[in-house]
Length: 117
Image 1 (tube, rainbow, N blue to C red):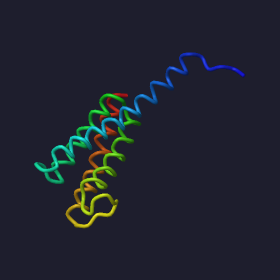
Image 2: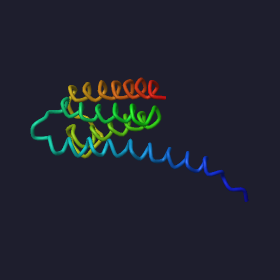
Image 3: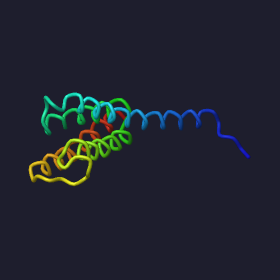
Image 4: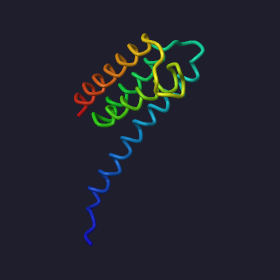
């Protein structure tokens, strides 16, 4: 059984670390959102998640940024939009916020990730 050269193994480890860091940034945005939930409303909270996606794109590239954008959108919906702890969206205004957030997160993640790569 042939072993991978150390450079291929190191590249895989770096890739896993980049994607893990992307999820860590989404988790950090969640934590910041929960800490600021009493002072910020829905659209303001979404900016915390967008910041995480942008930082991910600039730091880790396109793939991790797209993962962070999807995870951030789902997390924002699940934890901060009514009814909470579901993926349902109750109010039409929240639906618009979610759709715009998801579109902006994907596009900024894609653009910044492409610029970095």
